[in-house]
Image 1 (tube, rainbow, N blue to C red):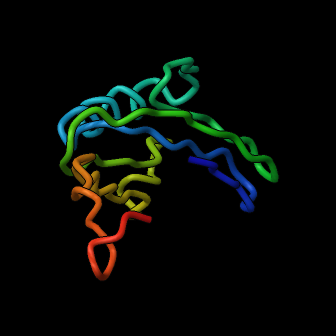
Image 2 (image 1 turned 30 degrees about the vertical axis):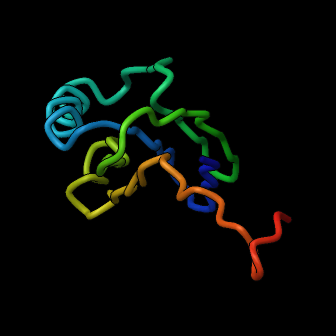
Image 3 (image 1 turned 180 degrees about the vertical axis):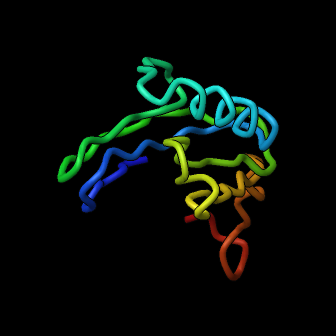
Length: 99
């Protein structure tokens, strides 16, 4: 994920379950200057960009949000839908020829 901050204030992108994000957001509201260095998140200064490199190991929905105070409440959140990694078997081409 590449997070680009084209705004005027600090933002962050945090991956997690909805409950994890809610719990973390409550902590952030009490400690707004808290700094992080977790693999599942990136903090991005105004005009900058950052990235999260994350390997999803199970299919399903994964939430993400900005947990800066006020931002989560303003709707800065979303969902990643992780598809199963099982690919359909390769079929033979027309007339049974392999490609």
